[in-house]
Image 1 (tube, rainbow, N blue to C red):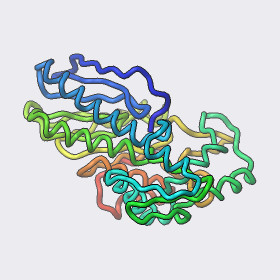
Image 2: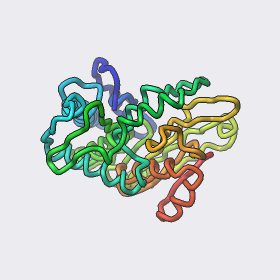
Image 3: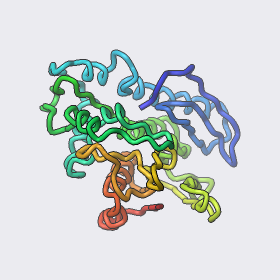
Image 4: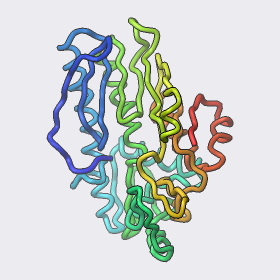
Length: 303
């Protein structure tokens, strides 16, 4: 949920029929499209959005020393009592683990020690993967709200749910702060505060996943309310002997999910819900489309 902290700044500039606030958070470019011509309002809303995004990043990023995630990861098996907001995210992680039959697991970040998805062709030693798996597994943690305990050597990473949660929190905060419509977009995960008045809907594009995809007309979606979230591997993968290995790992085996789509975008009421469904679809691999059809959600799945 974000790497080394850079100087934090906000910028407001003119967009197409709106003002756009920009800042960086959680290792993503963040923008707020604001249906207002008043720069003072746009600057105020951008500062509000950035403050909430940075609060969440500071609290839950695994890169921040001294926050709740750092205390849990450095606990060496000691039980840690957490606050209500952290408890809600741990409950959500528990739900995702159950819904995915163990495929979504916030303890799986340890696998980064053997996998590097840089577009190269270096696969890890299978024995090294097996060794890491001894430190992976939500079924190995103790979670009795509000007390959480990891086994020694294990860690958690909330990055798989943190950005969507931040989008929703910022959306609620802006809805309370202004009556104009705003589109919150954190690296392609987005939500609308309220239906726009001066246009039918906000228009957003789905990023192409390949050169062939770029040659086709870009998918442009209209969103007046609700949220969108996208999961994919367009930038993080390995390519070995003609086989593409997605960065979407199955924590039960320690190896990439077979047959995962290149990109899955889902529309839902909240960004957290959309992100949950897009991630679960990716983890279904070859069965992604069938999973999404079974959920009855509007989606765009690209292979």
